[in-house]
Length: 157
Figure 1: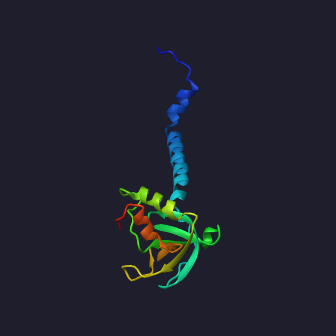
Figure 2: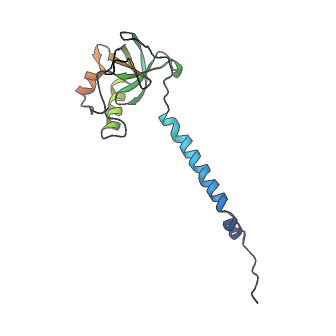
Figure 3: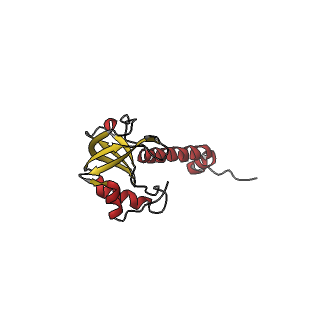
């Protein structure tokens, strides 16, 4: 006849804990994903100019990648216009040179006053992927030229 041995609390938790372990893992993944998601969220919320030739100015408040930035007169993201630079094409963040392109644009434009003028892109549209296509300048210097002079990575979609 076998002996009955008392069960330890850890054994009980382990045997019946398959579901609780999965729930704990799922909860951990959700917490992780919710902390990562805001990094990819678009902070620029202002309505975009829909015609070519519209000029606007403000401070560069955010740089999304090597050719995207947000311009606003206030610290309120609801007033920031998201811009896709018309005169520079940087690699996407996940491509080779993408992170370096973002750093280059941050060095050149972040927290600086710019003036931008909207224009039509290759598609003949002024708005592309929720960004207005525009040429922006810091003073009299076009940002695209400044990026090239700094040897920022160029090329991408």
